Picture (cartoon, rainbow, N blue to C red):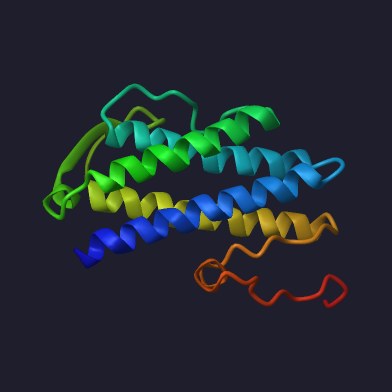
Length: 163
């Protein structure tokens, strides 16, 4: 049961981080296109993996082109759909296998638990890239660390003027 709880917490963190980043990116004028593309990819990948878990056709591309309103709607839809999926998951369900073909056309068969871990870790990897790109564009990074989520308070951030 602890693993199911951890999976849910990891998704709650991912959805929180997606929402936090979206808010920050929408306040940028303008948001660097490479940053927006990377953020859209986080949502696109989360969507593709969820569709695989639910054994339905992909609704979005892995690298979708999303307008802000569509990104906000997708992020909210993903938040609720992943929660529903995780709430219906059993410990045995984590071992269930999912067959799918990736974006390169290669067939795979992967355990649900491994797919979920991929979703959580992949998203955090790209959120880190987004923060690096924001810093390089002289914009403020968005602390999306798990500990900030768990504490309910922002994590420490290196000031922008420090090299």
